[in-house]
Image 1: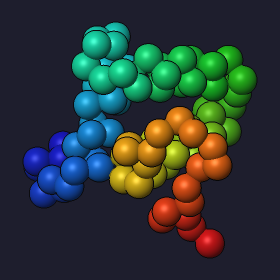
Image 2: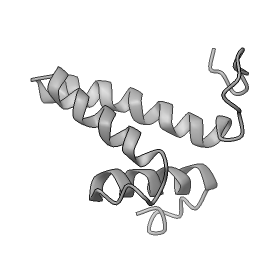
Image 3: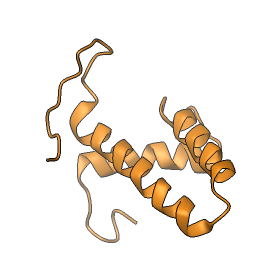
Length: 87
């Protein structure tokens, strides 16, 4: 889909691999795939309404995208940096 729409930017390509791993249970494609799968399955148990689940899922995917775009090189040390933080 990224190639078809000409969206060959690195953060989306990285996210696509994570999503592919989570969607196909090929969790070795990206270390983050298992986390996305776990969060998605958890959300499916939290929301009976599909539109509510979609809304929550959009926030989840936005967060994964922002990580792909801004935070892949950030170590797990605190305090976290806020580069690219939306106002």
